[in-house]
Length: 463
Image 1 (cartoon, rainbow, N blue to C red):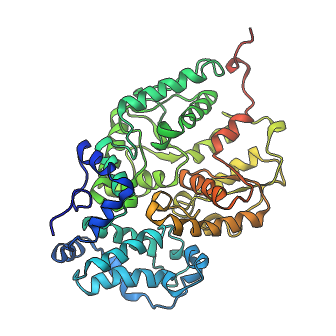
Image 2 (cartoon, rainbow, N blue to C red):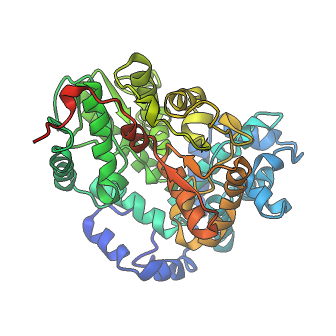
């Protein structure tokens, strides 16, 4: 059957294609057309032969089917501990079968794989910590998503998200003009309270180039202002690029490998153009993973590093507090029980577990910080990672997934949750809306600003 208007195997590369697909009401026609998609088995097998690395082949072969990975998976725990949610079962029944059959699978199988890949795994990589053979099903599911995307079997919202990256170079329809205007607007909006505040655009040779999540200019522009305020108080020489400011990668969630590379090359081009001493990314886990952890390999950089040192916002914030660039008024520290959500992408996957806790030592009164159990690199996914938050088709499954984090938060007895990651922040917000357990949640930036000891010369003059 010929490919339909909405559900097709080619990527969205033009504004016209994107608008046409967006016009589909909630993806209904997209999924109807998906029911009639033919699987190009020869192409699928050729792709597997070309792209499957020895590590993945070895993992599939040495898996002992022992099930010791089961309890490591929060989705297994919250879904009645059924065998279908055991990580090894999930990957062997999808990618494993696809490889054994040399790509000769049908539409129904591919749709089952799609549901498994996007509603039964958030690619949080926790299972890899507990497998006796070191097998990481999260890594393999990321690979499986790419194979599914290449055949047109990808959730509608992620097809759109990746398309927006291709068309606008941002996960949302934020143009270069929109971005620059938002930066100017936020600087003007906060100038009265923070005299001299600027958000410099395209400043060459700055000490810091700051990048962010497109959700910020689109929905939370105050987040950009908060970053600017903290850089301003710290006396940093910084800038944002007019192009290459968006560091997130819905294409990574979608499995659009080509677009993943394009995204990160766009950011790296800004680094090479503006030549900052280093780059700092916003409070977003997957953005950091895409640009700093995975990005260098997508970009083909032999040293496995970005063009300049590239750190997460929590690293800069801890440094600024440690060196005295930012000072906290001790009378304004948090004096209520507070807990911390560990982002899978920069805690488990890069080891920044102690950095966030160092920040809390400055902003939380001793005795009020309560750890989740488990915590640090052993903490569970927020429940909405890997794109799970944004896929309407699997919202019911996502809401069930939130229960594990709800249990962890309730066990702490805390009403305030610090979540320095966009996905975690969104998941915990949705958790409260769904289950109404009476909690509040926050990024680090607004909390720190409220308790800053601001030098006299940076305060507004009284009339």
